Image (cartoon, rainbow, N blue to C red; front, side, top):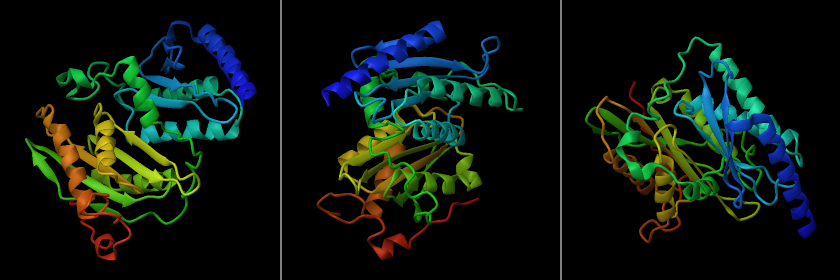
Amino acid sequence: MADTEGENLQSQIDEIEALSSIYGDDWCVIDEAARIFCIKVSSSSDHPEWTLCLQVILPPEYPSAAPPLYQLNAPWVRGEDRMTISNNLEEIYLQNLGDNILYLWVEKIREFLEEKSKTSFPAPSSKATTEETAADDDDIASSSELLNDLLACSHIDESFDTLEGVGKEVPTINHGEPISDRRSTFQAHLASVKSPGEVKEVLNKLYENKKIASATHNIYAYRICSEKTKALIQDCEDDGETAAGKRLLHLMQILDARDVMVVVSRWYGGILLGPDRFKHINNCARNILIKHHCTNSAEDSGKHVGKNKNHTKEKKRIEH
């Protein structure tokens, strides 16, 4: 074990030196001891209209037995774009098990950005990351907080079963009651999931609904008890609403919700809500989790979505 970790560390050092040489100022060391790094990736060095920041943690098991943990940071990386990039990175990892892959990841992201720059979509604004990011100073993560965020919300988890469930029947999706405030509307969606693959199936199904796909943000979080390792797998996504995914995941941790995912759609109405937006997101999520008995509180002990036929058959239609 010690020999393997030593080999992994040396491999990481060699890879980092190469990447630093290749990418220069675009490569950044956030915390060398914690193995946290960041690289700015742009569509073109001459005209960098499309840019994102790839932040990674290199675990001791990388590259021999685990992928890097990563986070994609850019205001425009949401929904389908984020899923496309994540799927591309996952495919590269699975095709190069045991090898260093950061260079391949960076260049695959750059290839994606180049394609975006050729579309008719306008280049993203470099001003605000969301319509309300300037409202909350406490939402800006420090480098130490980044480590916790990446470990809690990594896109490729340690179980390596992210492809399980793909191609199977999509889990039943339940829709909660909308909450409206100052022309913004929030609505939660819930599904029972047994693997990250089923999470992808649920997201794909939700995005087939034009109203949900057009939401300003689709924040989600999930917690799954792995049948293989009995370990708890969890992930979250802000979808442009800074820190919302982490807060949603924290709520699910407090309620001890397991084998379930919650997506909260927000349609922005043009009026800033400040911290109230987080209250509405969590209230939507809490209401639907309790309604479908997905908490392990004393009141709803041991009852999960999918185990109560009366509740799984209750589905509310999205109003078009």
